[in-house]
Image 1 (cartoon, rainbow, N blue to C red):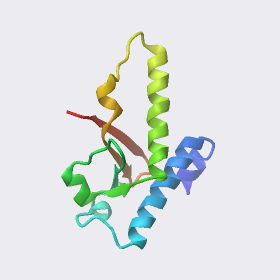
Image 2 (cartoon, helix red, strand yellow; image 1 turned 180 degrees about the vertical axis):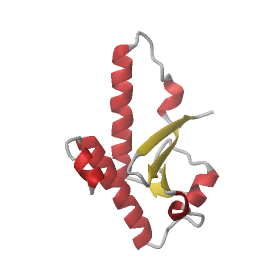
Image 3 (tube, rainbow, N blue to C red; image 1 turned 120 degrees about the horizontal axis):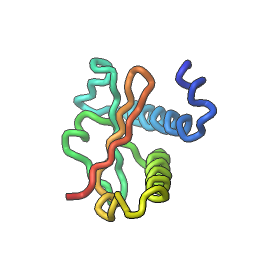
Image 4 (cartoon, rainbow, N blue to C red; image 1 turned 30 degrees about the vertical axis):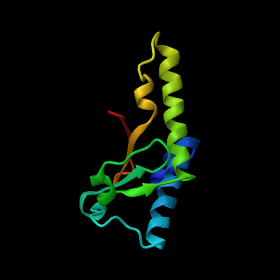
Length: 122
């Protein structure tokens, strides 16, 4: 609850929180929880992106919840906003075209923090 109060005035944070909750609930309702989910043991829940142009490390498919449309769109929106802001500050493209697809992993920690990690295609 404290986390929701802190992020309530930041729409994208509240939207990310909502999409991660929906994604996990959908997986639980369909009995599709990852077979090696250790979120209760380590205080971290992981989600991996599933969609066109996205791959997932095989290990993630065993231990992380799938993040699909429409919830995946929230993560893609955050990525686009961050890239646009960084590109507006730099004279060159720090992301290059390799990072437009690849793998995405979202970590949701027990202390209400989260991280979005993009891994470019090889």
